[in-house]
Image (cartoon, rainbow, N blue to C red; front, side, top):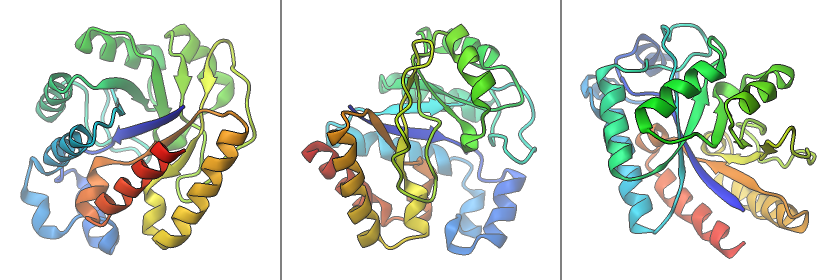
Amino acid sequence: MIYITHDIDWLNPLHPYSVIKTFTHGKKWIKPAQLFNRNLFIEGIEQLLQFNQNRNTKSIWLIGAHDKHTFYHKGLRYRFGNRAYNNTLSILKESQVVFGLHSVSSESISQQCDRLTNVIGKPIDYHRSHYLNFNPTSLYPQLKKSSIKTDFSTGLSRNIYLPKHTPPIEGISITPTILFDNVFFFQPPEKVFEQFKQTLHDAKAEQRDVAVLFHPENFIINPALWEYYEEVLRLVRES
């Protein structure tokens, strides 16, 4: 199986880190004028939901559920239960998406999973560590404790990569993410698609489950991603 996944990393354009990135990351982040649209990232989520619906694409949306501040280096840039978070949850639930947990390392996964489970009213089967920041020794026992069945935390954010096969660990499927949309910011699309097709071929030959990831905010930063995403979906369907 090839999973289509979306991580929700940002909900507030005026988060201090977003303001800093606007003036330090050039074309790899939003424009200064976009900072003042408080619904910018939520609108991006809605656009991606509609795009998927129009193409009959089922995807997994991974969202955080941490209850601490978000100013440390590898934190998510929103907090559980604030206005933007609740609005986003309402939009996703209305669209009847499949939810997953996008965890941070500052709290236990069981705490984060319990919060998300309580607000969506369903068990969580999928997980990815934010920034791929995890320790396997501690991660997998926590996932087992929370009854999470599939983990997408392995992979490389700036390269297309099929890691060595890892058998299920205590009933948890270790499903690598082989393509992150970040790669389109660093490599030409022709090269990306050539590598992606080969990696899909390798995954199929090895009978491996894999995942691809597109962040809703990246479509705002680089509108060309809509075309690239559509091509990825086409290749996935062919595979």
